[in-house]
Structure formats: C-alpha cells, structure tokens
Amino acid sequence: MDIYNSIQFLASISARTMKFDDIFKEIGEFGPYQRRNYVVLMFGWMITGPIMVLSVFVMGNPGHRCQIPGLGNDTYAIQGPNHNSLVHKYIPLDVDGLYDKCHLFNIDQSAASFDNDSRPINASKTKCSAWVYDKTLFYETFVMKENLVCDNKYKISLSKTIFFAGVFSGSFCFGMISDLIGRKKTLLIGVLFQLASTLALAWSQNYLMYVLLRFCTGAAVAGVFMTTYVLAMEWVGPSRRTYAGIIMTFFGPVGDLYALLISYFARDWFWILLGVSLPFAILFLLYCFLPESPRWLYGTGRKKEAGLLLEKAAKYNGKEASSKLLDNVVLEKKEAGKIWLLFSDRRLGVRTVIIYFNWLVTSMVFYGLSLNTGILYGDYYINFLIVVLVEFPGHALPLVMIDRLGRKRSYFIYMGVGGLACLSTIFTVNYGGQDLQYLTTALAMLGKLFAAAGSVTIYVLSAELFPTAIRNVGMGSSSSWGRVGGMIFPFIADTADLVGGRSGTALPLSIFGGACLLAALLTLILPETLHQMLPETIEDGKNFATKEYKEKSKKYLEGTKDIIVTQF
Image (cartoon, rainbow, N blue to C red; front, side):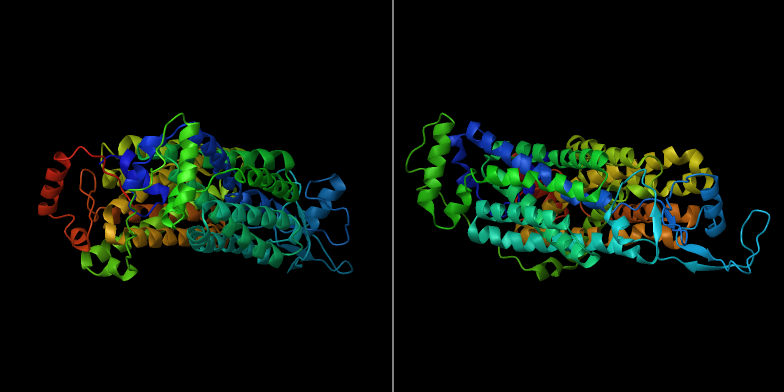
C-alpha cells in the first residue's frame, strides 16, 4: 500500500463508499464541474489559515518598560539626553544588564542620593502600573491596549489555550451539525459565525470579551476548514481524491502568508483583524453557489436530489449519465466502534497510548514553533515567513520517504532529527548567544520542518494501525489529543520567562526537542504498516505484528491488483 492510497483518510469520509464511488466513473472523477467547485473550496481552506496564526500579531508582545512617573509624553524610544537621563535614573537594570520591564525605582526626591552612574542609592523597587512600548514592530497590539505584560503576561498564553479549546469544541459540534443538516448549510453557518466573531473581536473592549470571542473564532474555524475539506473530497472520484487532498493542504501556509502580508503593512491589531475577516464575506457569497454533497444527500434518503446533482455534474463535464444512476448504489453502515475497544487488548492499548502521545507532541511542537516567533532571534516578520515556508517541504517530504523507508522509520527520522535540532539550541544559546543567533533560528526552523513532516506521517501510521472496526473512534480520539497539545504549548513557551537569562531562552525549545525524541523512541514499539494488509477486526489488530499476519498480508497484496484505500 503506498502513500497515495493511504493518505486518503484525510478526506474524513469514515464510511466505506466504494460502490458510491463507482458513480464518478460515469460523471467524471475530477471534471470541470468538480474543479470549479474545488477552486472555491480551496479559497475557503486557505483563508482559515490566518485565523489559526492571529495570535502571532494580534497578541504580539513588543519590548516595553515602566513609564516614568509624571512624564506624560514618555516613549520607549529615547528622545534626547534629558530623557535618557530620566530613564537611567528611574528604571533599574535586570540580570542581563537591560532595562527592567516590570519595576522602577521609588525615589524620594527630598532624601534621594545617587551614585557616580546617576542611579539612586538604597532606593526601593516597586512594580509599575503603566508602561511604554517599542513601536518598531507594532503600532498597537491587544497586549499593548490591555497592558498584558509582567504579572498579566500569563493571559497571553491563556488566550491561546482558550482558542484551541474552541477549535476542540468546534470539531465536535460542527461535525455533528454537518451530518445532521448537510455540508453546505453547515459551511454557510460556519462562515457567517467566523465573519461575525472575527469582526467582533476587532472591537473587543477588555480581556474577557477578547477570550470569549477568540473561543468562538476557534470553534468557527474548525467548522469551516473541516467541512470545506469533507465537501471537497466528497465530490472527487477515488483515483483523484488523494491528489486533490494533497493540493488543498498546501494552501494552508498560503493563507498564513496572507496574514503576514496584512500584518506587516497594518501593524495594528484592529486593522489586522479586519483584513483577515473580510475575505469570509466574499467566501459566504461564493459558497451560496456551491452544490450540496450528493453522498450526504443519498445517505440521508434524499435520493432524487442527489441524482439531479449528479446528472448536472455529468452534463457539465460532457458525460452522459443514466437517470437510474443511483438505483443500485449501496452505502455500507458506519462502524459503531467504542473507545474502550482501543484498550481491549494489551497490545492495542500500548499502541493507542503511544499514538495519542505522538499526536500530542507533533501538535505541541508544530504550533509551539509556529505561534511563538518572538522566542527566536532575528527579525520578527522574517522569522514568521521562514516558519511558514518550511511547511511546504515539511508536507512534501513524507510523499518521498514513507513509501521507500516505511512509515515507522520515516517518522522516527523526522522526530529524531527535529528533536535533536531543537535540543541543540541549548549550546547555541548558552555558549554562542547573539553570535550564533542565526544558527539558533535555523535549528528551530529545522525542528518545525520535521514536525510538519511528522504530523503528516503520524496520520498515515495511525490510520493504518487502527482496525477498521475502531478506526473512526481511534482517529477521532487521537485528533483530540492533538488539540490538547495545542492547548498546552503556550505555557511551555512561558518557561523562558520563569527561568530567565540564556537558559530560559533555550528552555522551551529544549522541552520541544526532548518531547520529540521521546515520541520517536516510543514509535519503535509500533509495528511497521508499509506493505501490510489493513487490519479489519479487533483480532486483526491484536495479531498485526505477528509472522502469520505478515504472511497473510503478503499473499493478499500479491493476489490483488485492486487499489487498497485506507478508510476510517
């Protein structure tokens, strides 16, 4: 079984619908009708990317220090010698010799005395309640508006966690809505919800309002990208579905580049939010003209409507389709797997736990390196550009490797090399400092590249390891653990501030690297799935790595020329 067949699980079509797929041989598997709709859906997929990375710019935390008492026109930038003297007088230095970001000297003007460097002697330090910000990178962010710094800095990470909690919730809610009322209606609801919540976010009056709306944008974006992908794949024939799916996943980073472009020129959180939300108004108008999924229509008993849509597609594609096209189509029922069956056997349970951990780690590292550009040396915007660009080779690498080296070995290489790259920043930060800052950034980007490759490969490996009877619940629960990884990475990034200094700078990347190495080592316990017959029953799952099952797989794969498709 090769990747071009196994990666079809990305279509999120959990039922076995090969008999329905035979219809596409009659109407065209990816004709002009499907390609027209596919372009619209691809645009929808692309503009969800900026929503995922909004926090990089909207919650950007620029350089800052306490505002000098009584100086109303104080700025972060030094205005002149007198201003420099006041800053030197009131702002203490931290352990790195830089101006303290959270404290100032409490100077009693009537009894103050100063040393030769014009610093107060025996003056106490006090926490400040007003700050001035470096406006080189941003004119204004929500962090600057609400002063989410010093004792309130944890709120930045908390907002990211709440967003991914929204993504987690939206995945469940919109999945159920999509099965209940259809793909098109769900998309229209999701796009309107996304547009409204993102626009409202731009007018957030306080932190509570911001995080509540950020939760809503997370739920909405999950509904939009998930349903968009499913609808696109349900209109494509089986022999073209893999390529259509792969091409669409490459447009996520394109959306991130759009977010970078808007943010670079706007540099204000209000205008950035407007810039990423308005395309959803265009998307809503375009989606109004999209057809419903004929597969969903047929599955819910609306056979006549499905038939009319398929006839329309056939005519547009220049094909002749029979009016009785759907008469002999049978959709098999979904497997009613129960989550506890994943742990019904020791071997299955161990594999499941390892898969869960790997999903958590790949998501944690992928988003941890994507959404924490500020922990890296160098230009903020260029770093984010590199972070996005490395996703393209990261997504393409498994297509080249996993059919040659195998899933397990490829994944071990990705996570092992990525982990070592992140861990190596300990030496470049602690012993090289700014002299090796570009090498530190390069190592972090290498880690991101292999994390992207690992996230693709763990999908394939998981889908091929879970037996058909519990594949749906196995993949769904694994995805949930991936969301958990998205929720915890912000607090790992915060460990840099807890420790401080050079060691603190390297700590988040070291944690990411150590997690990658542990995930890679645990993967060695899993069996290889390349050239193996997919396990169908729980018993197949138990015996998957045995010599008897491998012999059975070899005979089966040699004896059939049919395309084997990974489904869940």
